Image (spheres, rainbow, N blue to C red):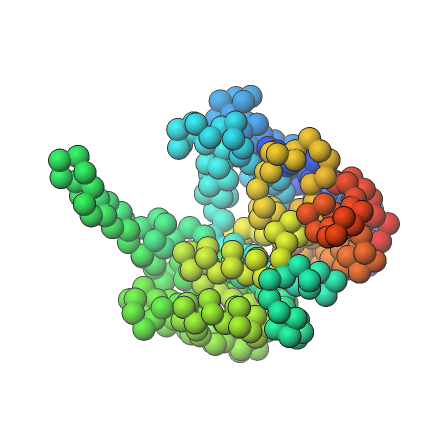
Length: 362
């Protein structure tokens, strides 16, 4: 159904390395699907990461923050590269990502991990484990927990002999991420598995009790609980049992990376970072790959799927999102491959050829 007269403002942050190429390829897909469904996307490009450092001296310019806050959504490529490895910590390109997440109040990270039937051979897991299908959404709390808790160290004669980092969560922090998970699950299989370590950690006990309380607002969604060590094992033993995984910052960091490896191709995986409003930040989970930045062979599919997440969660253009996701599946089923997923000297497509084929399949 066409959404006549709808206009959306999207901030584009190409960044470094392959970032500009994959963002360029993705905007072509967005243009095609927006025309088909009768809405318009007006984009504005801004600096972030190493590109921003080179031009204005900081990884996150004030102008970029201003552009992003005035947008309906933000689509980012990738940041970083060896060129900036020797800069001080606060000046590294990656600080641009942390900074924009903070500025936009993004506390929920959504990382889907899907094993496509036509790419089963790329997964490190055996076929019989994957036969039931794998389609997982890991929802990670992004701004609290041990990464942001009190920390310190003690020194004697200039040598550090002890250090500590504190895992700390408040009820409101847990409630808001839990509501994101339950709402996302409603659009999937209506199953949430909350992962914690409530048998050992007080913060996890609070996490579990709070999630249970929030679940009463979502009677149509099934809630289960799992300790993180068991969850790590179950992701390998039987990943198909999971639909939506809800967990804290450090557990989510680890489990989402584990889930991504099950798919066998990091170049296929998108992500979203959301807050309390519709404004979200969407990006592929892979890095800037500076070694192939000028070879025109980067896989744009993770970014294209990130755009589909943007259409779904920020712009509420669900039909257009599904159209893109189905086109990617068709692309793979036909046998098209990019350099990173080609096997046995298989012919592969360039970045632009990939977006062109996906557009043809929309």
